[in-house]
Image 1 (cartoon, helix red, strand yellow):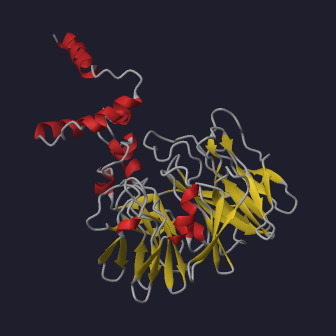
Image 2 (cartoon, rainbow, N blue to C red):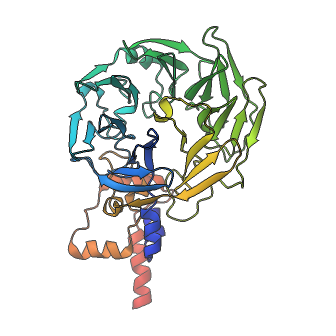
Image 3 (cartoon, rainbow, N blue to C red):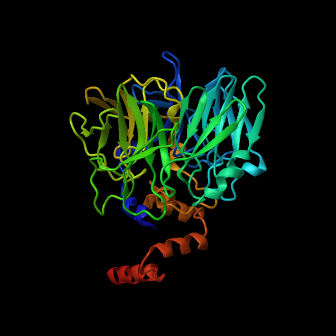
Length: 455
């Protein structure tokens, strides 16, 4: 057994089991006031109808002929009584008819199909009038979906210019976007290039922003400047916690480095996850850093924003909270923001919804007062899916999806029934590579020890 199995093979109470089953992490998008909201699970193949303000979700359907695995699809985009889903680890676009409950699947083209099953095919979706724009995955292919005709068109000319700057094929090409005057500005965790894209004719301009070794993971526009969150490169092991100010008209860049975050050996990598505007201030939400940072672009004043009452962003509230451990706020959405992180429509709204991985709760935080309401997600109808989550064929075998609820009783039932799968040598060798002293004698040692106790 791996560490996860060993930690959970004892008796699991019904209350503890529900604690896990009702803690599914959901990708969701806000809909206009009064319209139903929809979400798709990050953990399994499950489409949900959700009530975001009460943190409740009810299972509706699964995408047919798709594995029950994590990160299959991004959040749904509702168009004309249908839900459009862009594939992450899945390999087909999926469209759900809300009225009939029927699914339509459209396979992605060969040149957009990643070589590895664990690499995303496409990114998030933006609703641009008569069509949807779908961001590229690792192969760099944009897609456009004509809402009226249902036809797709694909574009890879952008990638031909960007690909010379790629440094890590395991990273997304794009992460973070804002829309200004009909144009989209997209940042890359790969390099210091910002893509200025005209989605109407798919023409683009690449801007070098800041130092050559920089990379970015989010962007917004305020006070005649763009503001970008810096992303760590592979050579950086310390905490990367810079806010970059970029004037696109002059090309001038300023890195604001002395933000009030804790810098020590325990905090490395990416400091921030999201950046949003509320009135005259920017708010930086923590990824591996320890506080929300409030930054005024005019005065350059920066301060720690403290919720009331304060709470620990990292302290896990139970042994089943293993999703995104070590991350403070993996998902932050500004209320009334209709297209998740791709469009920011209402900078005056001070309410942000935050997904907490420490107890799988949803936090509704008012940034004008610091007050918040915290509600535990309650998910109905997906127990059978959550109990048996599959891995993609080439997934680096992550223990958290190996078997979160794999009890000793369950193991014995599989053993007696003959359903216990054969030893996977590739997986065995992978786990051995993670251990400092893995000689393959554990079973023999346990057997000898128990034999002494019994005989």
